[in-house]
Image (cartoon, rainbow, N blue to C red; front, side, top):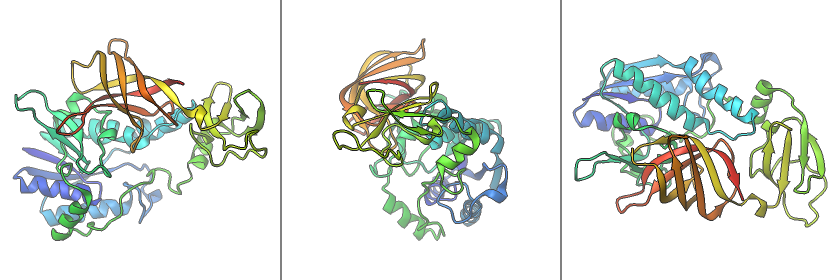
Length: 365
């Protein structure tokens, strides 16, 4: 097969490309340039889009003896990821920009161009697995075998078309063994730290970044009874479940810590309460993406609402025609925010199967 290897410049994509070469595929490496002003991109960053990363990706491809290209996706990245991030915070949501980047850039846009150029699949270093049933039916997207690195959650926003054209060669291996393999292959990225930062917020100050783009929109912080506690500069400064940085001088009457429990962007109201007030039992989600055509009606499954943790069993009622689903949780979750993805899983003896996802638009206690 003709394989397009997405080279982030990290150890995982390096080993993924190496395994694709070893499997006998015709592999071409590509690094995505996502900054509209390359001079602003950090060197030695812990993001995934720095100048250093591009150079690291090139060195890996040179060592593998495969062609290497840089594709400029900066316009689409700004529109689909950065602008979406800003707009979501402006309306009181808490988006995951890395998840949106996977959906819109690293798969949809990359795959669109790759297929147009005659490639069969895109290979990435994500920790997830694709397995084929014995009956030869549709394949399954599953969690990676390394529970500490599993990235199936951020792939839950993909559709069936994207999954059909993907390869995840490292999903069946734990991270320490991937590093050992990279070291044995002589890749300079073998000990490179994992990426954690939001790549387009150069100094890591999310509030300052959002304040610059959204501007001052003062509102009030109130308690559960509606008592005004202090004025704030904008709802973009807060997320559901936040405890630090509330800057409320007077302690709660019961002396317990306060957390952000609700954000109303229309009125500029941020509500705080106890940890108990954070618990929710029902999730409403729209913007559905499913990997299997039978996903409709009611199904018992599990839901994950953050990249790490927050997994509970639930009863999902799915209406694909209305692009809407309701999840009734069998045990409460805390700190669930609008704008997060609710990814559904089906427990299975061979590893959890990813069913699909929706974007959380409403919650109920």
